[in-house]
Amino acid sequence: MICKTMDDLGTTEILKNLISKMVAEEPENRFQELAPVIDIVEDLIGDNKPQKDTYLCSVDIEKLNYLKKTSLIENDATMTILTNSYLKNQFKECSGYYNEKFEKYIFSGKKIALECIYNAEEELFMVHKIMPLSADRKVSNIKRGFTIEGVIKFIDNRRRFNLSRISENNNEKLIIQFKNNKKNKATLQKQDELFDNLFGYWSEGLDESIINEKERVGKVIYSDFEIIDNQLLLTLEEYKNNDIDEIENDTKYIVEYKDQRGNLFLFDVGTYHEINYDKNKPILVITLDKNIQIGKVRQLLKKQKPIMENYRANISAYKRQHRAIRSLHDDNYSSKNLKDILLNLDEPTYTPLFTKYKI
Image (cartoon, rainbow, N blue to C red; front, side, top):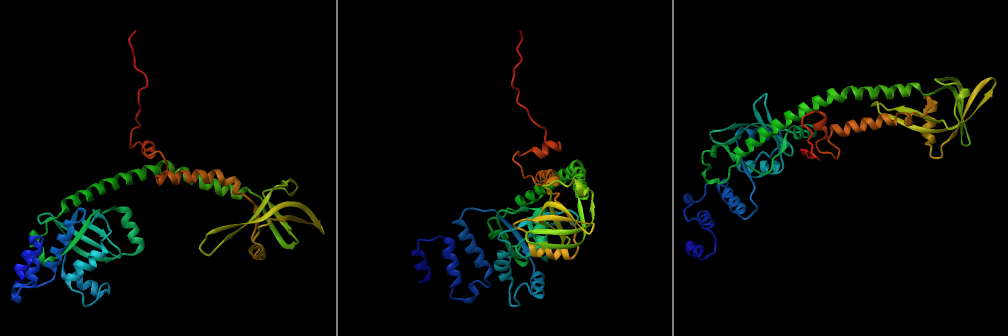
C-alpha cells in the first residue's frame, strides 16, 4: 500500500526509496542510524540550491569526548549531532591556512579551530586535533589564511569508507587554494620585509623628530598657581628653552597627562597674556580657553604637571608622513600597485606615445 501510494507521488526515486525505507514494515529493513538519512536529505536539498563546493572532513569519537570534557558540547551529544549540527554550525563561515612547520591544515570556525592532516589517497581531511579559539587567535588565523568559500561536510570517521553516496567532494580544489594562499602570504611577507627595510628607518627618524620637537618647546616650571576669573596665574621657577621676554603673544599652552597604561592625553590651557612680577617673582598670566576642562586642568596643576607651549602644530607634518607610511603599509591608497612598484615587486609599465619614422 505504501509503495503504491509512493508511486502515485510526483517525486524523485531517491525520495521514494528514502521514505519507503524509513517506514519499512520490518525494523531490520529500516535505517539503523540517522546519519545516512541526513546525508540523503542534504543531497536532495543541495540539488535545488545554487551549487557550492563541498569539502569533506572526517572526525573520530575521541574528538567528541574531548569536546565533552572541555564543556564545549553537551554530554549526551552523539556523533551524528557532532557532525551534522555542532561542527556544521561552527564552520558555516571559516578560514584556513597551512602550517608548514607541523604540516597541518588549520580550519578556524566560530569558537574552535581544527588541525587536520590530508589523506591524499582517500581525498579526505582528517581532524587530528580540536582547539578552543580565542578572539585574538581567530584574528591571527584569518590574517595568515584565506576565506574558505563553500561547505565543509563532516563525517563520522567510521563511515569514511562509504563515501560513494556523497556525490560532491572538492577537497583537491581546496588543497590548491591552500597552496596558493601559502605562496601569496610568502610574497606578502617578502613585501613587508622590503617595506621595513625601506621605510623603517624613515619612520624611526620621524619618531625622533617628534620627540625633539617636544623637547625644544618652552616648558613652564612653577611653584604655585591661581585661577582668577578667566586667567591662570603661574608663579615661575623656570621657563625652559625660551626667554620670558621673547614669548610671542599668540603662544598657546597645553598640559600633558599619562594614564596608568602610558597613554598620553593633551589638555588645552590657554593663550599667553603677559608677564607680571610679585615680590620679584615672575608671574606668567595665561588667558584660559573658553572650552577648557577646568576641573581636569586644576587637578593636574595641583600635581605640579608641567605646562608647555603647544607643540602640536610643529609635529603635524611628521604625523602626516607617519600616516602616509601606515597607509602605504596597509595598502590604503588609490593606486593599486604603487607599493609593488616602490618595492620593485612589479615592474612599472609604459605606453609608447610616439612612433619612429624613417625620413
